[in-house]
Length: 340
Image 1 (cartoon, rainbow, N blue to C red):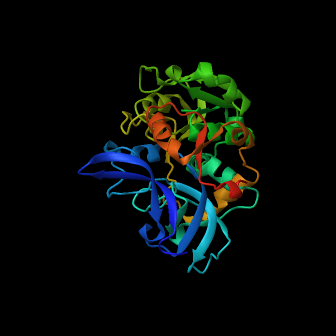
Image 2 (cartoon, rainbow, N blue to C red):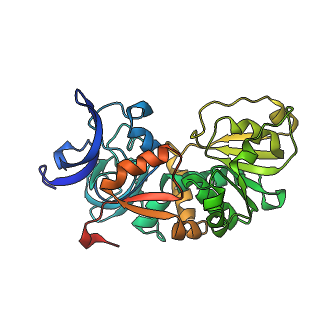
Image 3 (cartoon, helix red, strand yellow):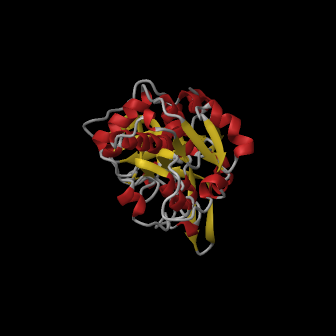
């Protein structure tokens, strides 16, 4: 690729003119160092991307910067031994979109060690439809299974079920044979959709965040997938059944919660931290293989994916920070001739 090749990217800036963002023309020589250059076809929209779009988010440390913690596309140049021109790849996590220019760009240059070959069974669009959100949901499901949670143990609660991680968790856990109870603050508008992607029951977020007296409460859930965090986690812990677990992956509800030791020492409850950013590559490959195969969240992919253009990002990122996102939004960076 020529160093002066021009392409479009969504750029955030913070300088003496203030904080601002928008679509700009960039050159290839403005991209960061890396041994693989990718023609990006799709990128996902995540809560962390929303944080990167505002100075209060404290995600971006240098400007100008291209956010986007997901990408899928085709290799156009490579000096990495595992990848060659024409390879179809995806990237989630690591430093992408945080300290290294990300996926909201028609071209990206990254470290080949961050890349995965696009799994057979997934298109670029489907891979970004799943993205970090679906990958985190699958990690959560795998962690619960690894810790002995089985469908016969009882219902599994998914908090924040109408969001990206939550909706994929509903779909995957249902596919695995679990009775899924979906908790959402959008029960009137999203209840039918959640049932359609696999929820057995849909309940209001208020039911899961209600105060419970005492250090323990009635045993309700064999397990919980919680991408929300915050104060409601206190109540969720009290309702997990003996030997159950909570897979915790997010903080859209806040970073702090109050708890006692009683759920852990009297019921043997496990609190499982889910990290999708620096997940080891061997686990990453295994999870993506499952997402392309027996765990593929078909129902959520068919009905919960919303495709947008690059210039629509400011509104979408603002909406996700306000808690207004439903399902999964992805950004198309395709030229007309590249439409899948």
